[in-house]
Image (tube, rainbow, N blue to C red; front, side, top):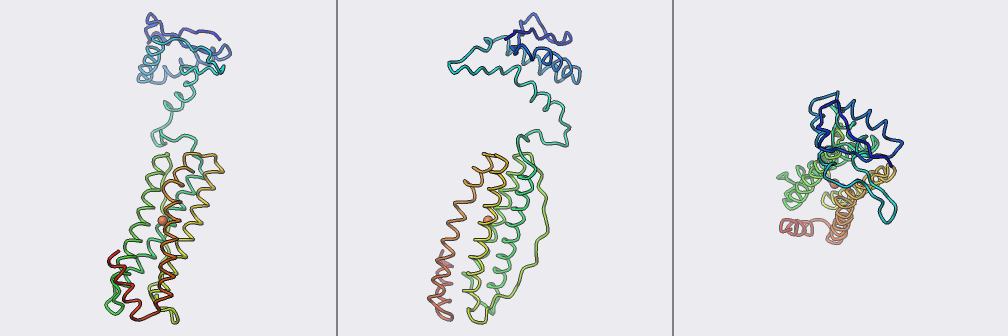
Length: 263
Ligand SMILES: [Fe+2]
């Protein structure tokens, strides 16, 4: 290992004893990159000064018990060059975020919006005066809001990782839900169960995209914020379907609606 003095075009006070620890093979490239960085902007010179001052107050890297040596002031140079040369149109935060993950998140945002739209249609249906099931209307309004919140959560995450949100088209949903055998209440809840399972499948695909890209933080985010909640939702809606199959149509549905109003 060679200790190299950081001399940066006279802009940095070398008398401060600014010393950077470098591997012997890196010395030439380090001083070259330092010089080019300093030439690029005045603000960068001040950053180099900070690095130098910090360096002067610390001991040089020494071997640890495991033999691993971390040399922060030389190893950071590659990242520093990227940060200082990125045009403002690009994210500064982006790091190890694959385009495939960015696209998969945008696809999932579209899934959440579409499901939200169907639930909104169900809300509008059950809120009609000639349908008269306010508990179902309230339930599906809440479900619609929740799916939209999921879309917004994914938008925040996309921005957090330095990706760009791209909204896509939403499909026009059905507006009539009165099934000739099952009636509207049971049919609507079976539709909700199918949608929740479909959403779960899409979340698995999103998770797989993150796993394929070795994006450990993204897989953890999907597991923490979506997968458990989705499984719980599927269980809850499954129970509703079972109960609606028991009660039949007519008075049973009216009573079930009262239960939803209190939920
Ligand atoms: Fe969702």
